[in-house]
Image 1: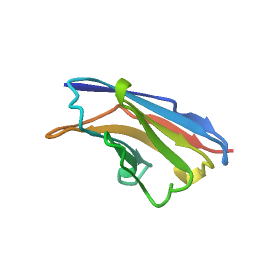
Image 2: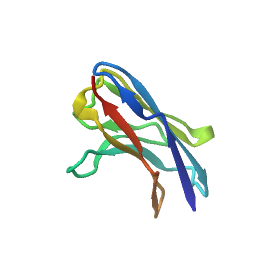
Image 3: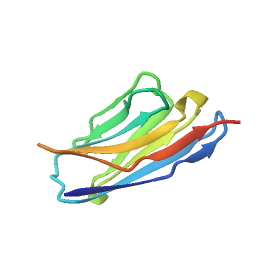
Amino acid sequence: QVQLVESGGGLVQPGGSLRLSCAASGSIFRFNTMGWYRQAPGKERELVAAATSAGATNYADSVKGRFTISRDNAKNTVYLQMASLKPEDTAVYYCKITLVSNQYWGQGTQVTVSS
């Protein structure tokens, strides 16, 4: 079993920044992918950014140049640095870890961008 604990969400004004963290614990295979997804009210969950344990990353077009994903493999932790936030970034952000044959989700953290 794998547990994911997210932190760092909150309320921020447009143009502001937030940093999300997600720490994984349990039976974690060294080769894995950790990522962030988000789900706004009335919309489907979508990929925001993901990073493999080998260092490859990918981003949704809507966040390229504004968000940065990074990992600390020794701590099994993934971060999402979000800058230049827009109201349309408002959503519940979920962390996910994908292993060889399983995937696990965090409980989600709310990010609200509003003046």
